Length: 212
Image (cartoon, rainbow, N blue to C red; front, side, top):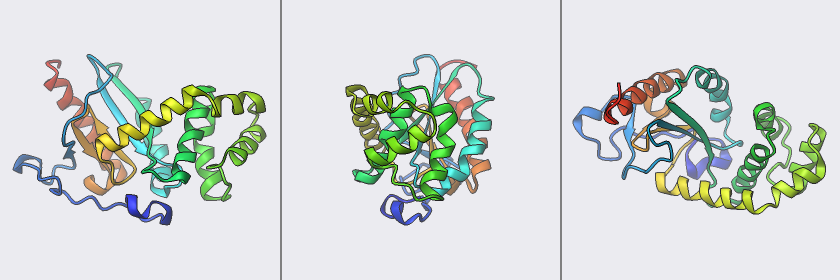
């Protein structure tokens, strides 16, 4: 989903070679992160999924991604980063994601958030809408609100916004591997291909770190 069309639910078309890639990278199903970004996974390979809850492509990708995550080797660290692009609605979705994560509720509610937003059109970008929905899902009302308004969530929201800007994310869902490479359905041709390319990039990153 392209940044400029995020709220219109139009898929991203990230052209291969648009970042001025060298010949060896053309048509390979991935692009280079320019400039490369530092990672927090020292001695391991970091994989980031950039997404947002209003994106139908992110929702379609999620079940495939969940199955892939379960098979990741121990030296791969996976994390999700909700994009905001400076948009208040997307920032609200990101705050909900981070709140559920802090509360330990994300593992069983993540997929349901997609449905609530995209199918039921619930206003989960607002504090009141998010709280009402979460309470209906069994989350304690006070605990939810305390977390939603907490310094921890606010700090993490600022951090994910910073990461999205640093990576110059223009479309979602996008996978970033080891701070150096991008892949996505738009680049690789399909969600399934993107995951295959991610596996290859993980191996490549492992070798670049001097590990087999």
